[in-house]
Length: 323
Image 1 (cartoon, rainbow, N blue to C red):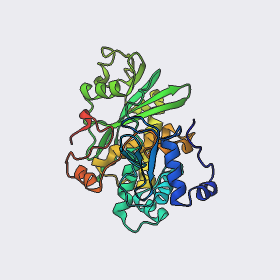
Image 2: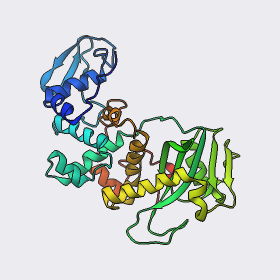
Image 3: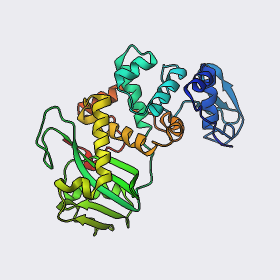
């Protein structure tokens, strides 16, 4: 039995999810489209414990919360507010800053809005997602920074981001973006191996950091003579993606993205870009109904800023850790 459909307009969404009970029913139908199944013993009959919003298996007594494993779990926010949050995040094309988000759903506390947005961003990353394939453009760029620094490789005060874009004729397919520590062969090869299937054709500029891709199992086609002055010509799609990313960060977040949280914003941009033609289909994903991901606590988010390890944004892989 398929999962429940999704409203196509704002008015339809408002009518359909106007109450806590309506949101709860949608959660149940989405998580168990063929009827409840006990995760412990696989029995299909359970008692419904309405006050706690959970099922209790009639055979083994195991209790399963409707929100367990989702970004809504143990949240004191009403389900209606979470549903509106997920709707705005997945359908508002430019995205939302925490301040805009708080205003839209009626939150007085900025920190609550900040945490909710990061929980939703965490759910945007699919575990074990398929790597890119076919012909793929790869390059890096520097993003942000609280002060102006020199351009090009070695820019000061900025975050280094590697990008990969599938080439589909003159259009871009899926993209991948990661924060990396440097432009060495070790860093760039690790990024390519994590995001692109072996055997794919990888297009790059002539930077020596990409020289090991052929040995790593890729059909590497570097533009030996092409460097920054010809980047847009030889790698147009990845540079359009970088340009759109910078415009989005500046327009939506006014460029005020902390270095330690940059990967979370890259995850959101990637999610939006890859679903730009089907924004409605992303609603269940960000609520955590497709793959279990609960997201960070407020304390965990600020531990990231302090350099702690109680929480790591998805895709903050080993080669990206560090200053």
